[in-house]
Image (tube, rainbow, N blue to C red; front, side, top):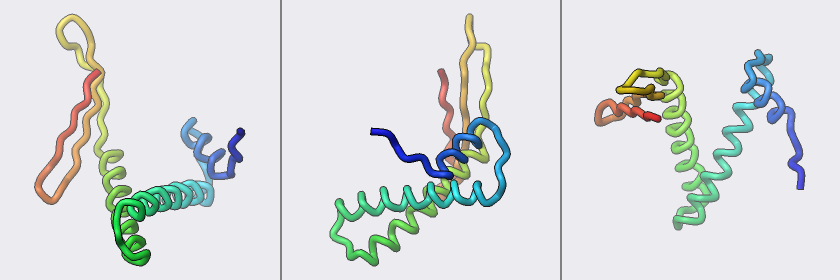
Length: 110
């Protein structure tokens, strides 16, 4: 079964390929991402808790703000480099996230 493509889907594809988009398309992409995240999170929280619907909406809205903030922190602090290690090269991705308890430093090596 084929998926119906929206304007935001096409715009997201073009943005991923490096094309500069008008602000209204960029805003449409962000709104669609936020709506999709909200629906997935609210369904998960509703299924796993005994919260009232208004409590779920408040909780998911707060959780969504924190998750998108974390994603933005990672995007802003992301570094990628290739290092010579021993006889070969290692591909490393690093980022830091500020938390209430201090700084989290993550390094992924391949």
